[in-house]
Length: 150
Length: 233
View 1 (cartoon, chains in turn cyan, yellow):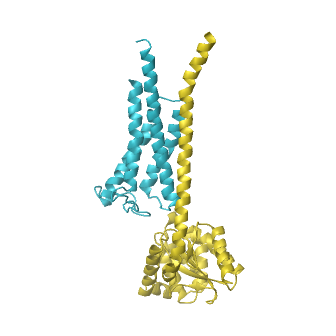
View 2 (cartoon, one colour):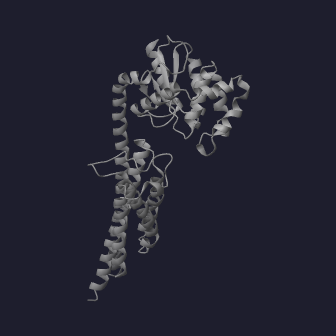
View 3 (tube, chains in turn blue, orange):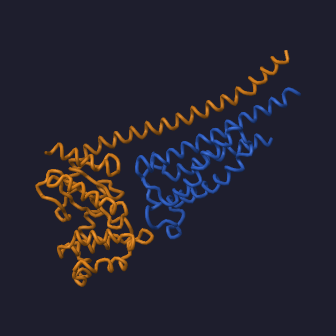
């Protein structure tokens, strides 16, 4: 019993670290992916894409800083960014799907947010990738948070 | 004995953290490597495509209606997709002129319109109307020189363009009548359609004998032009 307790805590902190690391991996892949689309493929980001980038890019650095040494409060700093980015991504997906009406879209000029350059497998658009990415960064962190607080 | 336990503890405490660091750095390096390899693969594929497209490009690139500069028999044909409201086009204008002067008689230029900025098509209309009075290049230079004044918030504002054209000896009444002629509509529509077909999404975009720049930049343009001149002469 005496030996089991600390051992269990170490184990849960270990898996919490792994989850946070996975979140960092997703954030980094998304960031590099976004940079590949704009800088290498030359697809100009629309206004909504820029807002999502604003909330995704810093996660690479914030999560990395929280991994060494592991800060179990990491989720508190990362989650506000993830939540706002996730909501913008959701808005963008709904806009592309036509559920959000055209007249309230904030980017009528410049690069249209509604036109989709990429549609992999017939449904995977850039905003949908973004929504998935924000979810995949957020979920492991929330699970890690509960593991540590338990 | 005590020392041994201490060492043991150190090993236990250090190993996972060291593993973590290794995992982190290896992942970071792998991600960057994938990015770099992807970039190389994408660019080499693009280069292949642009070489193949070069010949097909020629029909879309060259239209009778375009303003041109330089001798018609010049063997190197530089085509520029151009937006009068675009700041980079403004910066490239003297560079392109220098490039033509350095290869005098061997390079000719065609200007295609890609008025991507809001309101910029109206400025194109003024240029085309001025062309009917044989004042295209003078008007173009006046418009580019004063570009910051008539593009507040990156939008071309016609009311700020007019005062910049005072000293050119243009018949302004005629400009205002000519600029909305249907033939100018057609020129702009054709140029925009060709730009789209050629995947021109940003200005300025240059084609040298049908070949696009492998990568945007003045040095790249100079090299492409010089290579084409060396090949043709």
